[in-house]
Length: 152
Image (cartoon, rainbow, N blue to C red; front, side, top):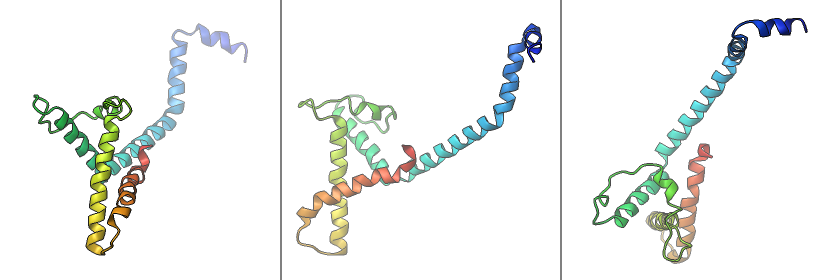
């Protein structure tokens, strides 16, 4: 075995040949990994498209951006780049603690809570709507992580 090593090193482009052999040996594993990754990505995309709460989040971000940019050429936007979502936590309020992300989530909680309360009121009447209102808001918004389980 030791006599073979120097002879392999003397062959021109031996390392390129070894890389090609290694690639050929691991090709099926790599293909299976890539295929599995694409399947996960496809499921995640389907979850995003089917998530009503995620669409509400995107809508709230767009509306908030349009309100902030009202009166400028950016004020009537109909879309935004997805990397804008990463910047929501960077935009701070006047109290320096609240971010634009906090504001957007609070708006979604408010509208989803009103929607849930309206649904319950239509199905049954109850007298203490105000007490249950906040719980309904949080329950609806907390469901987003369940809807998007493949995005972790």
